[in-house]
Image (cartoon, rainbow over all chains, first blue to last red; front, side, top):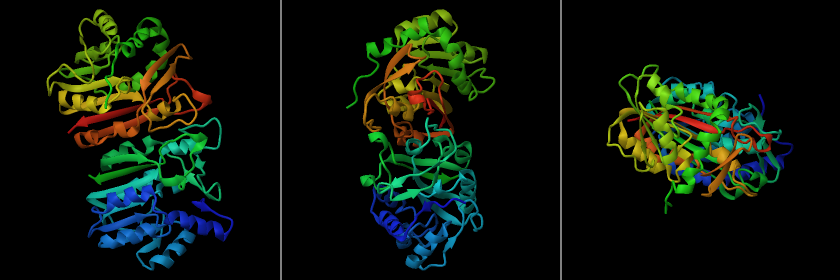
Length: 225
Length: 228
């Protein structure tokens, strides 16, 4: 499996961790939107990354579990978090029983996996009925801009490489269309409660290609039916 | 501030559809029309349906063939005149989408084909459609995709968030129409999310639209909503 974050040296890792620590717009909206939803609840996070978000959830939630597919990121996060509820696992094979969680959260981590359909199935399975699925992901319009092959094709399955810090950090992410996120399966399992889309602060989480301004992320809050 | 929309010149630009392009359209438009028809029940006997933005009435006979009691509405007087002549069995009226001249809980279905994006403030239309629909009534619409409207912004430094009118070039440059650009958040706004269930979403390339720089991007999106 392709690594989400490829790097050549330790300084790149350090820089990437710095990016993740920024109090970006996506963090702001995500924290605001999850704050009351997670209070005294059992929460699952998809993608620990550097553990920043996890530390935030732990302040309010009753219990926070987190899965990180990347071993290196897991080691980095575990140093900070030091919690056995943080484990190495793929989002599409979650090692939890049905109806375990009140809330499932994911910020910028779903496109690191090529298994969106299976992720939805797993999230639906581990969420309690009435539970919240809150996620923020790279906007499909942004991923269209990030395609390196020409002519660009919104519908073509491929990996895109968002560059951070003028190319110092390169990510590997799977392209999804909006219709893949808003599939019939999604609407059969979840009721949409809120949708928004925006840019992230200071271009740190993405480039603006061709000098155009397009949404960097979209945010979804949905309720398990 | 919302500007007054559906001005005379905005409306008349669609009149060309009727006289010049009915034949060219046939093939390309069949592509997306069929996707809309797929959302409809096979038998609509006894159902009251509004075709919002019916134009010269191209979809009206299909609803008659399904047994529906069909109403058509369009902002263009000229197109409504043709629709009346072509489909006398349909009840067609000349009115704006923002002030639909029907009372609440009238329709089982509201259908709208490539028309919603012509309005500057789509939220007003969603509220109107919600008002005239019966509870559990369906709203199926197809509209210009927001990514296409971003790419059609005709200058360097295109800005998704900026309210502006874009030129849509159709049928290999044979026709250009001006329409206000919209963001996805306008279609998935809080009113829609709170008052409708989303049944289905799809998006597709539109062969009748311009293919800017040879790229493939969605030309339209289709939403199937149900009033709660």
